[in-house]
Amino acid sequence: MNFERTFIEKATFFLVMFLVYFSPIFRYQLGVVFLFVPLFLLALCLSSIIFHIGINHIELRVSDVVFTFVLISFLYIAIVFGTTTDTLIILIVPILTLFARLISFDNLKAIFRIFVVIQATLMLYEVITQSYLYVIQVGDIILDEKMMGGSIGIFRAKGLFESPTVASIFLITSALFIGSDKKWFFCLLVLSLMTGGRTPVIIIGMIGAYLHLKNMIYGANIFEKILMVVFLSICVVWLSQLDLLVFDRLSETTDLSASSNTARLKFWVSAIDFYSHYELSHLLFGNMGSYRLEFDNSTESGWLQILVDLGLSGLLLFLLPLLRVLWSNLNFDTLFFVFIIIICNFVFTFSFGIIGAFSYWLIVFRFDDICKTNSLIK
Image (cartoon, rainbow, N blue to C red; front, side):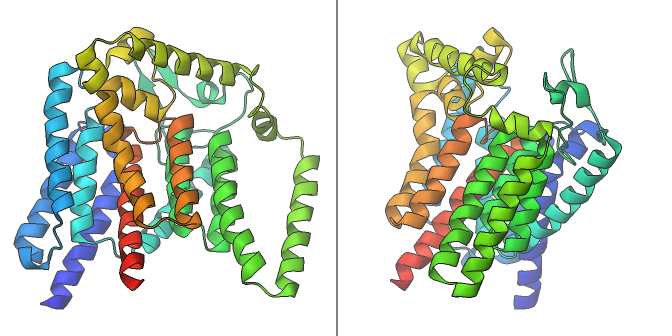
């Protein structure tokens, strides 16, 4: 019975992870309705909990019940106060992630390793062929290789995901879970360079630097320390000699006059100004879809998008569980990883879409579990 229960837990969680991270294939290649995937996963999780695992096996916390009730309430509020329901998915996916947490978070690292191998294979194929596995169209805009390359004209690999940005979300999430292993860290860093994005390279680089330099300083012997310093020095010199467009793009990170940066800043400023003109009810509960209808674009920032779509209360809904993790286990490690998540969701819409929202809440819930375990040990 225990073996059957454990197998069902692991199989259900793997299937949830597979369907979430492979959802672009179902949506764009197989024509599955966008909301069908998370709704099917919710039904799958519930049936697994009720019919296979048994209620006595589940560690159901009061906070989980309250959180689910709040999310369901926000679904209703978003429909009432919103202009559209385009981003309603960000309120459905957290419930899915919570149910997946109740089933099992076992083998999370192993699952990410499998997915990274698949993604690396697909991205390498794209880089070699200089063509995407599939191209999607949003309205009149075709998100092909030329469109994604922008004015600088680089090829930005995306693998199984719909865009290099979503691929970046997956790579950053993977780095948080398996980046402590040097082999996987360097693999993820190379893949982040293939996306042509600045954010994943910088964020994954920061995660690796924090994890491995800390271990080098405090845990390695003197020979390993010298070897690491020599290796990093060679890498810096080698990269500085490369004449690659992706590094030109990285060099624009702090250049506020660069077109990509000025466009992003413009959307940030417009989002703040747009929100400041809301009436009181929308200040509190947002107006889902109104900003996108007005500017035909996202705010280019997850926190600002939450603010205009779900209001101040919605922003607190996303921020408070993260701050609770920090408060429950206040140390430098927790502070660093909370900082990483906050930065990720600030510089782009990390917490949006099926994959983004699932990744965000997967990180929050997993870190919450780890912090609770650490507090019990203490």
